Length: 474
Ligand code: ADP
Ligand code: G6P
Image 1 (cartoon, rainbow, N blue to C red):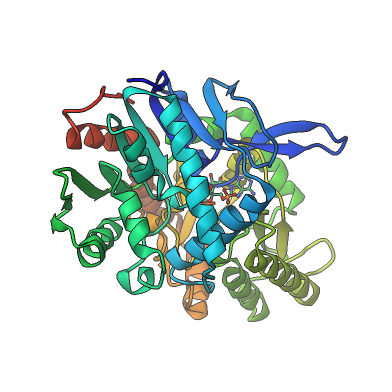
Image 2: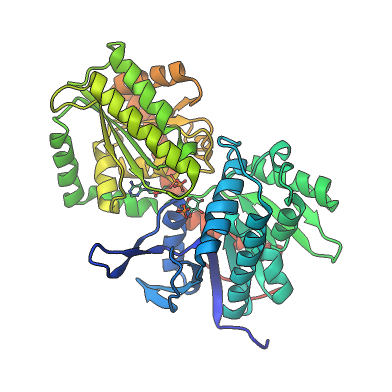
């Protein structure tokens, strides 16, 4: 085919796995991009020959480059596009709408126009890079129009799409003035993957109601004779990689150092999140503080370490959240802490993976309480790092991970008293109970890692479109 490139596998995601940063001396460098998408997809890309198209986190033009075994093709966004497409339509319209309207979504027509323009640029780049009959795997809510745009440019391709975040129920999705365009955009793919079966069902029902296509179970029949499948593929992590890291001497040593620095309390509670209003950070810190105020926990003996990576800092709702958490932590420590014993040790920062593994190793109770989360990989990372079968996980029912990690202490994050009870129970549980639960969760996480996830998605994609393209084996 004329105009085709040479890559047999093309990953298309808004983020590249690395993010451009300006160092204090003014020079530029790279660091790992934040978030679960990169955590999951990076090991898949490393294990395959292929290219990754994405935004390098800056408005500068950056040439394609090679990074740790991956071929990366940057797509520049202008300052205005960062504002309207990324901060606007992606993160102030779609993100809150798809997460149960935890914050109020904003609808602006110029943001939508920028979304269409940027999606087209990604589709054009993918069309340029993909070899004849290649597999193109498009990721997440920022790029829902890419499958259809790409199919128009390159009908020879096998196109998969995976949504990393929840897909909302029809009642919420229908608020979108551009609902039909988004559904049609996704239908450009041969296979549309979601975290949970309920999300796939929401999608198929909406396609039937809003676009009018015939559907049967998980299949959509298009007028041109094409079939699109919608199904669940719960994402995971490089479980063995995390376990190996957690077993290393350096991590073990660092875990002891962290515990010492905290004053060797008998219980360390831990929260690890992007600083996002969907994660329920405020409610969990309040629940912990109330347990101290009630006399159920003592700051001499228990501490809550909350690590929050800065995220989407130009978006208003994220700024408000940051201020709220800063104020809450200040108030709790001011009211309840003692000299050298803050109730909450709050770190507004991003850390290397080794440090995360050390934190997981040192936490007696891992607290994951999102109001809504597609999966939540932090919960799985914690489990993968606990090769000693110790450690209790308190997990929101509204995280996708709760479908698999049934042995966690499951909580409703809207119920503060329920969370208080779960924190106490998890902290006071007998060893035998903790070990039994952790063993069962470890079996689930170690057996269903991210390689298995990619395998099943790509195998299914090849099966939906057997007559087209080359088969990519993960
Ligand atoms: P999301 O994708 O919404 O951010 P996930 O829990 O699925 O949520 O994924 C978050 C990823 O980001 C995990 O791999 C986690 O280890 C990483 N992460 C979260 N907070 C930090 C931090 N402070 N420093 C480094 N990595 C972090
Ligand atoms: C979640 C989303 C990803 C996103 C990540 C980090 O994991 O599903 O698509 O990349 O958060 O957010 P950011 O806005 O920094 O890319």
